Image 1 (tube, helix red, strand yellow):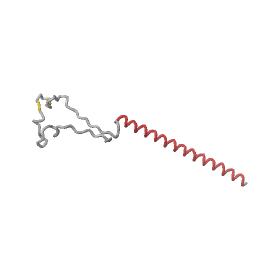
Image 2 (cartoon, helix red, strand yellow; image 1 turned 90 degrees about the vertical axis):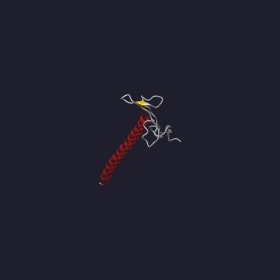
Image 3 (cartoon, helix red, strand yellow; image 1 turned 90 degrees about the horizontal axis):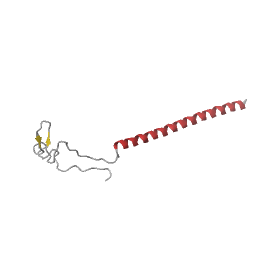
Amino acid sequence: MPTEILTARTVRARSLLAARAARVTRIRRTVVAVAVAAFVLFWAVIVADGSMGAQTTTSSTSPLADASGATTSGSGSISTPSQDSTSGGQSGWGGSSQPAPVQTGQS
């Protein structure tokens, strides 16, 4: 009789160990799949947005601006920076005649 109990316990223990091994394998595969998915997602964001370390600024001009800085509005009137000095007495629209420097994360 003790042999039958030992055999039943052994069979049950082996089945529990096999179930545990299957759970561990499933968890490991899930962790690897999540890591790969996150890696792909991060690279997709970097490819779509550009490098994460560099910040670039661009200046754009109005397509209606001419070389003197005068622009035409929709009604045909011309305004120049010297006429529109509403920024605290400074001449020009931006208050500065020099463009802002480009900032990068590498310097």
